Image (cartoon, rainbow, N blue to C red; front, side, top):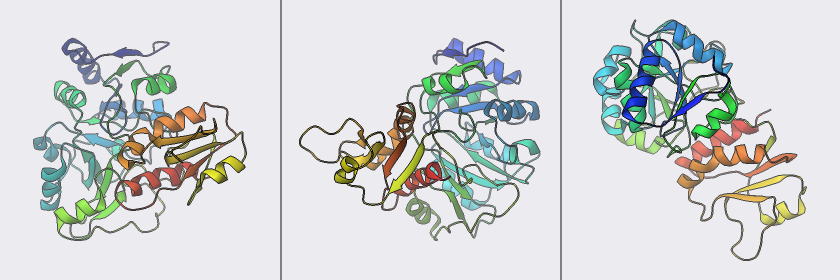
Length: 329
């Protein structure tokens, strides 16, 4: 294995080369609209095993399988009318559906379960690569298991550069949070497993019925990723604060970082240890920057990272989910 991964731009020549590597069973870090993924042939147990090994990921945490076209859904999953309705509404895009799997997908990719998590990404380079590879691609986030997800090729290179050989640079992820995951194994009783950019309200509207929240996680293999209590977590301790104020930050420990959703105050210079995700508090822009800012603060030598707890529904729910898991000890 090379000492340091090579980073490729998305030229036709480079995409053809990386597709050949994927066909040969190797793994490639890829851009998606959500976060960067670590891709391998989803039909190959050997390729999936390489993904788990490079990330240090336990094999009871299933992989998401990515397809380039709606016609490929039936290759990997047994789709029901509800799944097709959602795919028509939201694919390509950041929605993952959990469905019964076909025999094409090895048990290793699905934690030994008879279901598969599948989505069609909207990032053009990733979809081109899937088409050129000619197989569905399994692709969890391209980072060491449990750490903050990567939203740029530089993030991948820093964390996995000595564990993998190839990185496809497609720019910064436009959404910045992992996909929404919906369990449709029982299509009349859909369950939201992970909130994301596709909101519960949008899913309710398309399905014309309320999507349920998951019950307390049961023991055994998980049916989809992102279900662990501690996840997306920096090395530095994260503390969530409802109603965090600038006064509290100023009076708090000065060796700690204080992270707000929007800029706390409009006038005057702020302390050097006060940060924000978006000046105006735009939640979509805040979500896009969350993981990048957490990484910067994790490298900043702070004793702890204190974060304003987002409130509300929609994308705020997805932000809160990631922060609660990041703060879990």
